[in-house]
Length: 397
Image (cartoon, rainbow, N blue to C red; front, side, top):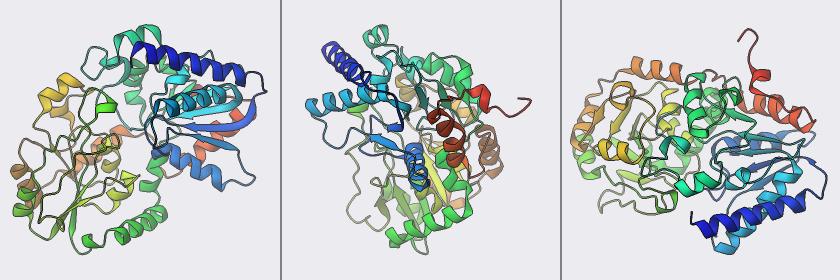
């Protein structure tokens, strides 16, 4: 972010906040994201739960929308500042600039639900010295990832990494709620309904085994995210044959770059427009990724995970990892598509390794994280009783 834009957004946020302070705090929840046109993941699950409640729980959704002109950006920045001053509870799932340039109003609460489970690739203050890292001038002037009262993590074993990334006290983190979007994977009724819907949307997968290919993005900033295009789809088809199909799901930050070669349209299907990658997991027999956090949720299914990562050294320099990728990844790592495809064809997978990875990555996966989040976090906060991570800890913890 350029210095002039940072200063302008700071001023506009504070102006919106000042206007909001003229009004009383409202019994309302704000669900806000800054990087996707609509709510996805945890925020989408929380919104659905709020919509089901009777009596209704009032909420407001803030997203950047699909238009991203300078005027749109400033307008959404002003609205964010206003709602930060007036909403009793403000929930975000990623970096959210307006939250870091205000002084929180008494009687309000801010919750970070994050968009990824586990702790794989580094972010926040952990990448200040990396190519992907936050701008040094920005961090000097703006305390990014500040003002969170509560933050969800999938396991307390990774809380120390989030504390480093947020430059925050470990005391704000809790795994006792669980992760809302994992409810789909842990609830048999929800799974069956979602799987049937996905199969109806993609009739070409009927009677075939499915590889879900879900790589993360490349690039030193979100605005310049790109697809690495590392998988040779023709080689995948030669090795696996027509009994298999590949569902390709690019990272939401990547807006272009996927190319399916002519003649492979029935073997490889672009599913990048799907808002919830977890739904695609339900119809997938194997996951192939590189450095994406989708490996955590897929591990909950106990199915094979393989990695296509020929650019590991370059990615480590650009971003870096919180764990030893070669030693701790829940599946084998390949440098070529041919070797990867052959491993999938042979099918000799170490599923115990996957199950152990899942057990270490999640403390709570009972299919009820979303209603628990609403009941134990949002409802008390709306009644003027903000909760802390300590309040949520199980007895004796």
